[in-house]
Length: 401
Image 1: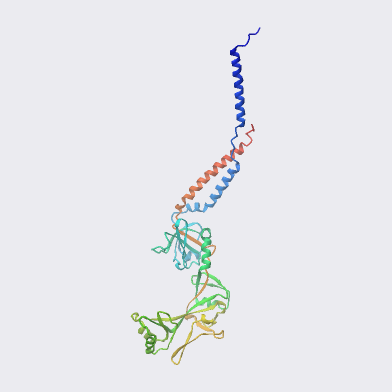
Image 2: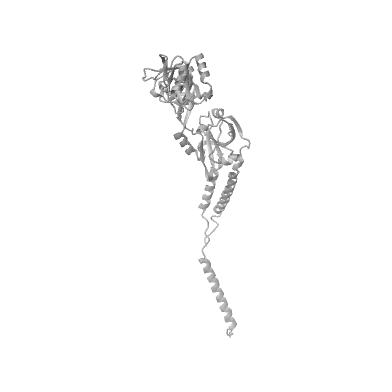
């Protein structure tokens, strides 16, 4: 006969039942607890792609960081351009004369400024970007520049500068008169300017032809010293030279005087003393003619008149100078090459797309932070690649609960 249960046995049984119930509750809670979500592999792929893109964007800066500390000496700027020795993203030194006439100032970030100007006789193919503290030019001008040489169109400020130069500035080419004579009657013509560059000009392109007028002098009297026009003209009449009044300007009485040989020396001696406030300069004038209408004849250029674009021609009539101006195409003007001082043509200032700009004082070592940034990006890319590789390798190892 079995013994009846005791109080001790009943207590133990209740404890076991409670323990089983607690374990069951813990299992239920574990099932209800949200699982930790794993990062999508797409995030890692995006991080790798973004890092690779950033490294690609800074590859030229990192390459320049490893350039030699001593700049490559390109020597004379026009010769370097003509010989094709300019190379993108190089540390160079070049010598040239700044073209201050075509210089501009651009404002950068944080109140910084850059003076941008071309070097003369480089056909707008070589510019210098010079850092400045303000808009004023530096106190000390130089003709030697060192820094980073890059293609102009690789810089963020290129569109702004390209547009401004094209719309607001002109580029002047100076030609040898014999070059124009050789090309006369052939338009459009490809001409070589005095700097050695070539440019193609259309037939309707206007040329500015500066001409000297032998034996003719401009004499001007300062109105402060010679307030009466009658006194100035009486002084001229006393010399006995043919003369004629020319355009009146506010500070001067101006006249044209013809004096040949010894008479010219007499004129200069009479009015050459600056204390008299009288100026004497040889006369010059500018003809404006279209390239397609210029002809060559007997070491001269035959220019078709263009009204006000032609200076007056003077003749001595009854001891006086009388001006006349060609009025029809039947009265061309024959100008000897020996009298031509210069021939210029102006075109819109077009910066060539393969032009260069030298970023002055940009030393390779100042680009070290680009290299450090690429190292950090490389580490991030490597870390994400390792994680993705491990997940790919173990993709089948995990089984659902």
